[in-house]
Length: 50
Image: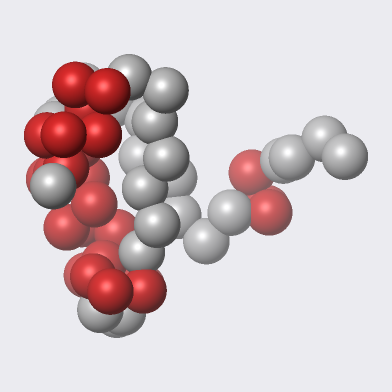
């Protein structure tokens, strides 16, 4: 299946840090942080999000 823009509730494609982007998404979608899942292939970014 090819994922397209309409398949996502929110997209952040920018140079902002991941934490700021996640906070913006949480605010936009009006959900709790416990409802978010973060995936990244870079261990440094995964640790940064903790």
